[in-house]
Amino acid sequence: LCFFFFFLAPLIEEIFFRAFLYPPLRQKMGKGLAMMAVSLLFAFLHPGFYSILPIFVLAMALVILFEKTQNIWPCVFLHFLNNSLTMVKVILLREFLG
Image (spheres, rainbow, N blue to C red):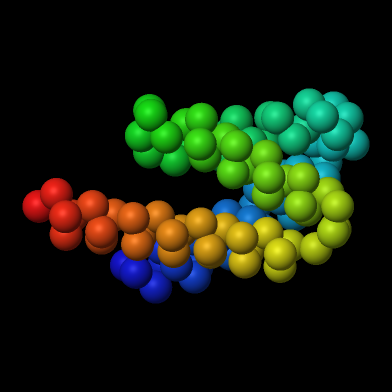
């Protein structure tokens, strides 16, 4: 489960949202609307009502990074880093709050 969360999920999600879904939407809707549409979809497909906004912000950062670099690997790395920091936060909160 940890392997999937840390390594496979960022890779699969970045390939799907940034490399597969975003380019045709950008061509049809324009850059700004496509960025927002892909980011909203990304946010709503992740669990937790209260995490929609932070995940949307992360998704916007990822699609902007993809737009600037035209390379999926920086997005995968940033996504991996975000998941890692989230896991550290969860572990620390459990440790200190019981």
